[in-house]
Amino acid sequence: MKRFAIFPAALLVVACGGGEPAQEPASEPDAGMDEAAAPSEMTMTDWFHVDEANQSVHMTITAGSRSDALGYWNFNGGTMGDMTITVPEGFSVVIDFVNADPNMAHSLGISATVAGFGAMLAPEAAFEGAISANPTSMTESTMPGEQEQITFVASTAGEYTVACFIPGHAATGMWIYFNVSADGTFGVQGAE
Image (cartoon, rainbow, N blue to C red; front, side):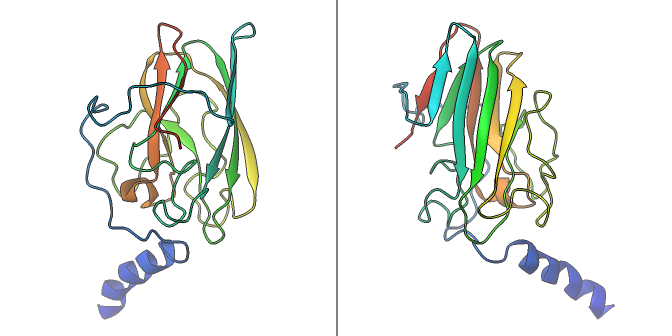
């Protein structure tokens, strides 16, 4: 019986090994984005490009771009919903996903879950193709130093998230908002 009691704890240690966050896990976010917490100014960054004529968006999202943002568990430095990417409804989106975390595999997907990230976030993309390969695997997802391209159409306006589907990562805070605007608005809020 002791063998079974010890195994889940050992699995947790393996799942959250090197590269783990330096901060405590995030508390559960409120449903939807809190307007008071989100920056109001939409900006353009060097990693986010919109081609209105061709109705396309191209961006580079880097996991582990900063070691001080949850110990590499971040997307372009954003954690716990402190950044919002907004794209126009109907635009095709290309994400060059780069894993710069020197220790840990990560994944990227656009999720319809915007609150209550559990230890196991279901690897279901909000849009067809909007998820990296093997998103829950610590050995077959996007490994340190690797990159992957994700292409999809942002077909339905609404609030979504960019999340890591490796068990425990989104629950710890590895997620940012991804909004699809019905009015054609685009840009990034909260980027450094």
